[in-house]
Structure formats: C-alpha cells, structure tokens
Image (cartoon, rainbow, N blue to C red; front, side, top):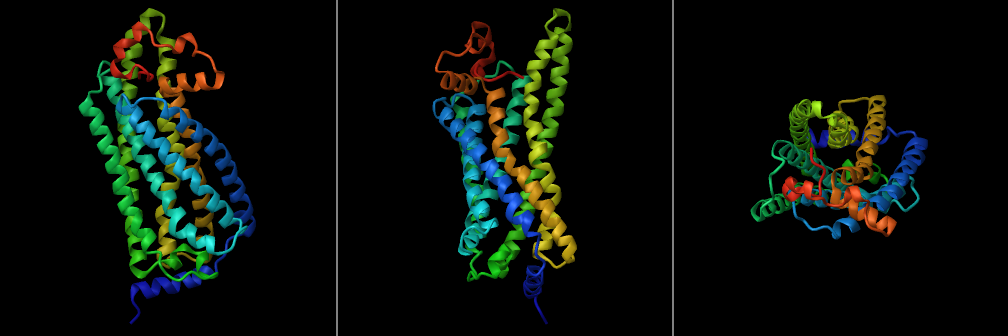
Length: 342
C-alpha cells in the first residue's frame, strides 16, 4: 500500500509535466525582479548607510534598523531568482535557489512582517503616551526581542535547507519540492502553516492598533479644531498610515494565495490548469511581497525624523532645513524627538 509521501512524490512527477508559459516565467517575471533589484539595492543600501550613523536611542529606531537589515538580505536573493528563472545560468543554480536563496527570501519576509507589527505597536504607544521615554531597560528589551525573532525564524528555516537534500538533476530542479525528502515535504507544509499564523496574527495586531490610532487622531482633531491648526496637524498625523498601506499592498494578496498554492505543491488536489493559474497568481503576489523591500524606505523617510534629517544632509551636503532641526517645543516628545509623533 503506497504511503502518503510516495503518493506525493508521484503527484510531483505528474506536476513536472504541467509546465507554465515560458514567456511569462522566463522573461516577464525576471524583468520585473530586475527592476526591483536595481531600485531595492540602491534604496536599501543608502538606508543601511544612513542608519549606521543614527544611534539606537528608541525602540522605534531599533525595529527600523532590523527591518532594513531584513530588506537588504531579501534584495540580495533577487539576482539568483532572476538568473535561475530566466535560465541564463546552468541548472545547478536552480538547486541553490531551492535550497538556500528561496529559503532566505521567505525567512526575511516574515521577519519584515513581524517588525512591521512591532513598529505599529510602538506607534500606537506613541499615540497614547506621547511623553513616554525609552529607558535603558526598554531598549535592552527591544534588542532582546529583535534577537529572539531572528533566532526563531532561522530555527524554522534551517530545516528547509537541510531537508532539501535529494541529488540534484536537470529534471528535478524544475520543482523545488522534488528535491525535498519525505520529512522535508512535511516540514515545509508545517512551516507554511506557522508562517500563515505569523501573518494573520500580525495583521490582527496592525488592524487593531490602527483602529485605536484612528480613534486617537480623531480625538486630537476635535481638541485642536478650534485653533485653526487642525487641518495641518491632521495632514502630518496621516503619515503614520503608510505602515498599514505598505502591509496591505505587499503581504495580504500573497497570503490569500499561499495555502492553496502550497497544497498544489505538497498534495495532488488540483488539475494542471488550476496548477498553472495558482502558479501565476502566486508569482504575481510574490512580486508584490518583494516590492516591500522598495517601499519600506518610505516608512523610514516619512516617520523617522533622524533618518530624514541625515538623508537630506547626505544628499544635499548641507545642514537640514530649519523645520527638521530639533526645537525646544519638540522636547515634550521624550526620547522619540527624532520621530514623527502620531
């Protein structure tokens, strides 16, 4: 009696005959990723350099620094995907993509999701406690939490590298699942469900926090309504919504697609036509996910005054504009004087 693993492997052999349109998979997507790579490496390289000059004096900046590290690692995986999908290099590189670079891509994706959730929580705390200051203890806690996220996600991802251990051939490198051991397929499916849990939990946190932030903004708008400055204050505060906009654009579409696509890879539950459709939808939404590496720098620029000030000084080679210089009136923002208050 065949085992489930044997059935899955048989399904994968049948699936390998279900090829996608080479014009889309070998030309269009590689071109789109090339554009992302050029923009992403430029923006994140500059962001990394800027953040090296900014001290980690608040939880907010610590979380932003971790996000930019995650983004730069994600961008560095793009060339391997581009060359492999476009078939511009020997088939052996496809094996490396399946075993290493693709795992790193997903590893950094969920790190970015977790840090966006933490940044949102920090912005909610800023909205409700504008005079809150970061203590040495809270900064240490933020660093320990950041380290725990990296270690935990690495622990989840490493088995996907180790268990992609079958001998690589020109035929089986076409589908990464064919390179996995029987337990590797099981672990891959388990990790996908864990990652889905991470996404949906982060989404819930972000939606709740933004609902509460919106309430605080409305209260603030009503309080300042009679001063004649309400409109300009509201315009400034709306910058904080860039986080939820980036999250919904980049991550929500992919996660509505990932479960059925994973099932198409690990179980024989879809016919060839459905598999092709899922492949195109998955690749399209995955490109939107990759776009996150190019959109995150806008979060740094609009929400972090330290980053914006240092960037403008670097690009213009002159002192930052007067409106970006610290003023005495801003000292009521506590240790977050360099960040845009909610």
